[in-house]
Length: 322
Image (cartoon, rainbow, N blue to C red; front, side, top):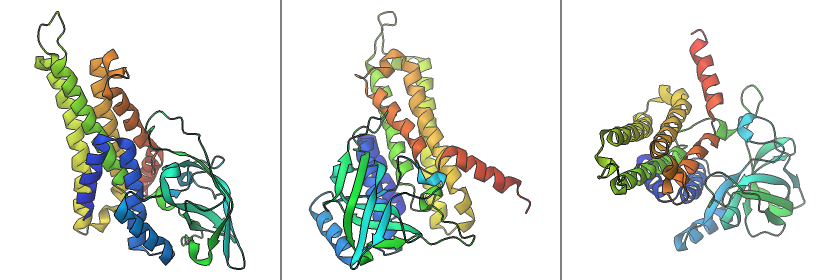
């Protein structure tokens, strides 16, 4: 499948359950990375593919750390892999490891011999301990906990270096948007669509005694529904329009991809907030799915590249003499 078909599927999954959409998107991004630049130990990747034929075999990049925070903000991990006679030993603690015990493989960001890279780690190896820390506003079913690696033994080909840039600095791959990085925006567009559906269902069923008819028949609610729809149309058009430009070979567009992701995020949040604000208390009750959709939609902000970094980079690009 091409990127646009994948995005359509992730949008549909996100519309059903954002946490499942996140797990699926993360796994697909790992497979896309392997397709673009094969780096997994052959036996590990063959095993992942074989397991994927029989059911979900989840994989995720395990990057954030309690002390460091988000890797996209800079800095190096404290997690290390140390050479042994026949391979590597992994030690460290990671935070926000989405998938938790449901993962089949971890792709762990670590330092090795003053180099930075990733190690491919089967999830069932001895020395891996999960700490239940996930207590979040949204995406509560994503199983995003802390994980501790203690003397986890790995083969010699498990480590893959992230090369330095021309200036000698490591560039975090997650800090910049790329052609394959639209899985996260896609699933959140699905969340906005789910919010639109929940709003419409409530409006059609809500009949205030003073009104004597469903609020869906009032112009105010119809205008609100139109505003929600406008935001979703905007987000979907940005999402698929960006992919179409990339498919056409528009490489000049690459510096603008991060800004597109921010614009999609703004539209997703605006759509869900508009729905909740129009309904008042019913939109915030846990008995109404809109409350969950709003919480899930707000989580789009934490995925790199984050808004303030994108705006700063875009502003510098605009203001730099050409």
